[in-house]
Length: 420
Image (cartoon, rainbow, N blue to C red; front, side, top):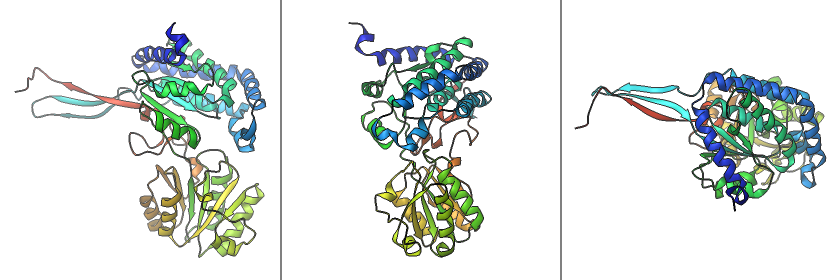
C-alpha cells in the first residue's frame, strides 16, 4: 500500500516540507511577485468564487444557519477585492527574512548576529471564514513558510477556488506550487493527522471556535500558536466623552458582530449610567442589538433581560451585548480578570491616569484607549493581513503577521578563534 493511500495528509505534509526549503531560499522579489499574481488571479476568478461561495451557503445545515455564522461565511465582490488588496499589501511590506534582530562583538573578536529565518511548514486549521485561507497563504509566502490549509466543511468550495488562485501566483513567480497546499476534503481525521505530524509540520495555528482550539491544544504533538475566544470588553469610565463613548461602543459591537474583535461586554461606570446607559442601549437597539444586563443595569432599565453568570463568559459572535455596571477602574479590571479571554480590551476615558492604569492592569494581548476593539486586526495594524490573533504569552501576541511567522538563528563570525 502506498503512503498516499495510507495517509493523504502526510503526503501533503512531505510535499510542503520540500517546498518550504525552496521557498526559504527564494528572493524577496519572487515571493512578492507570487503575491501580486495571486491577487490578480483572485480578481480573475471572482465569478467562480462567488458561485462556489453560494454553494457553500446553500449547503449549510443545522446550527450553522445563524445569521452571524452566514455573515462570516459570505463572500461579496468587495470582500474578494479586500482579499486581493490584502495580498498586495503584504507584498509591499519589508522582507522579514534575513533581518538582523541583534548583533554584538565578544571580547575575543567573535561577531554574533541574531537573524530572522522562516519557521518552515505552518499547519493552518480554520473554520467558516474563507478569506482566512488567502490571508494565511499570503503571510506564509511572504515570510518564506510553506502552509498546509485545512478549512471547515462549511467553506470547502470557496477554499478550493482561493487555493487555486494562490497556486497560480506561485506558479507565475516560478516558485513551487506545493508551498500552499490544501486538504483534499473536510474530514475530521485530517485535523488529527496534522496534529500528529511532528517533524513535518513545525507550527499549528488554529482559528475557530472554542471546541476547535481546545482540541488542537489538547491533542497536538506539534507546537501550537493559538488564541482563546474573543471575549472582548469595552469599559466606559466616568470621565469619558459621552458622544465618543456612544459612537465607539456602537462600532465596537455592531460593525461586524461575528468577528473575534467585536466587543461582547460593555462595562459602564455606575455614576454615569443613569444618563448614559439609556442612550447607548437606544443606539444599539436601533441597529438590532439585544442585551443581557446585570441587576444594577436593570435597576435603571428594568426592561433589559437579566444576564446569567454564563452570559458574561460567552463569546456571542452575534448581535448580543452583555452589560455590567462597575465602580471605577479597579472594579472593571476585576470583571475582566474574571471573565476575559486575554484577547482585546478597551477603555473610553478622558482621564489619562485612569486610562494608563487600565492599560497596565489588563493581561490581554491588545489593549486600547478611546477606540473600537474592532481595530484588533492585522490589516489595521499595518501587517497587510493576519493569520490569527494570539492570546498566549510566548512567541507572539495579538495579530500575527509576517514578522511573527519567523523564528531566528545565530550567526557567529570569527577570524580563526579557537576555544581554550
